[in-house]
Image (cartoon, rainbow, N blue to C red; front, side, top):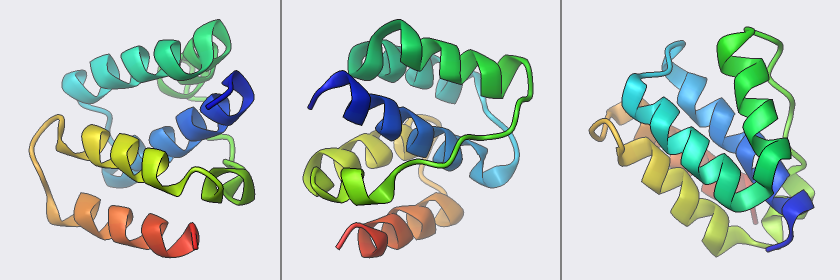
Length: 101
């Protein structure tokens, strides 16, 4: 996965993290690591903008992410499970899986 696709995935992960209107410390740690790994400093900056500065969440390019469905679902599930598995997060994983067809 290239950095531009990784950046779109970081945007999606932010949507997942904010699903319950709160980013836990464990989610933040996971987001920071995923952002750096997937998109480098650009990804880290997107996370900082959304979480620290409360800027509007950028929409991900789902068309691009659909080309990497398995990797996307793996990353989404990883983030969703970082602070325990909750029903709303399982719903989001299922919804995202449907959107990536």
